[in-house]
Structures are given as C-alpha cells and as structure tokens.
Image (cartoon, rainbow, N blue to C red):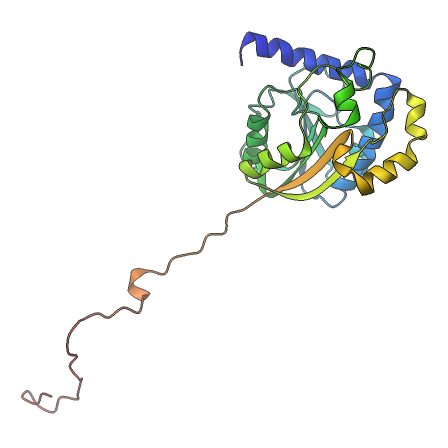
Length: 258
C-alpha cells in the first residue's frame, strides 16, 4: 500500500468512527445490529473474528452462539474489552483455516483492496466457515446524496462504496457461495427521529426495490471442493492382452493342451 493509499485508508477509518458516534450513526447501528444478530443466529463454532475499525457491537457479542470473539483492527487503542489484535485486513495475522466466522462491518469500503480482504477471509476460514459482510450501498439514496452539498451527514463521506452485486461477485471469485442477503435503510435519514418514522417506507422497499437499501448485508459460506478419487489403474476393467484368448483347462499331465 502506498503512502497516499494508507493516508486515505486511515482517513476513512476515522471518519467512520466519528460518524457512528453521531445520533444518526447510532440510529443506523441499531438496525445493523439487529440484522447481524439474525445472520449469525445459526452460525456455530469456536472463534468469531471481527475485522475492521469498528469494535463488535455489544448486542452481537451477547447474543452470538460463538463465545470466543476477537477484534482484528489496524487502529491501536480501539475500545474493546475482548482480545484485540493489531493488524491489517489485507494480511490478517491469523493462521490458515483457524476461524469459524468472520464479520466485516463496513470493512470493504474503508479498504483500498477489498478483493484482497475477501481473499484473506477465505484463507483464514475453516471449510464451510461463514463470512458476514455489511456495507453502505453505492446505489442507495444515501449513497448518492452524500456527494450533494449539505447532505454529507447522510453517510460517512470517506471510503469507496460498493453495491451488493459487486461484493457478491467478489465473494464468488474468492471461493464463497451466497447463503443470505438483506437490505436495510430505505428511508433517507436526515436525523435520528427519521429512523422511527420510516417503517412504512422500509417495508415497501424490502418488497419492491430491495437493491436500493442504504445498507446491504451478505452471509456467504466458504465452499469446499469435492474431490472425486480416481480408481487405481490396476482396478480398471481393461483388456490385459489383445488377440485370441487361450481357454484355461485343468492339466492332467505335462503334455495336455487346448
């Protein structure tokens, strides 16, 4: 990563932290936490690793069936009571096939190499391990409005937004199969109070224009290649000799032949 990329990366991380401490960010976080709870409800294992700048939500920690939870973050001094490992999301300091589930909470849009992040996710997950990805949708009202003057409070201004279809394509290339997808936040939020008054618009959006939700949530499973063993050469039913076969008989003496 070049110095310019590293600077933009750090700026995106700090902007994301700042935004989630605002009343609007807290309102969005409540909806995201409920979604994460649903997607992780059936995921079991020994280790759940949260990768990125944001500490794992307290609600997720309390409700998850996976009790051993770890935060891997590039930001030193992150506020988290559990085990914290300082490391880059593009080079996770974790052993290969050692993690049961990964949570990428707005990790891709804050990274200059989102495909490398998913490649690392595939490496550290066990076979049939799960990854849950949440991100802001580039095609949503909020994703488009954040570039308009006076609308930057809609979503964090830093970072590169993606679409759910783009992320799903990257996941497939990395070796994952899609299991579940949700879309949230169809109502343009201009204040915290709007989150409580958007139930009707959110319900309509879920039914009629799901891909325009402000947040996408994807759960995918690491695929395992099924190997078909080849039969040994000696067991293949191939003719041993060519030409006319000789019929075996019981030899009565040293001169009897067929």
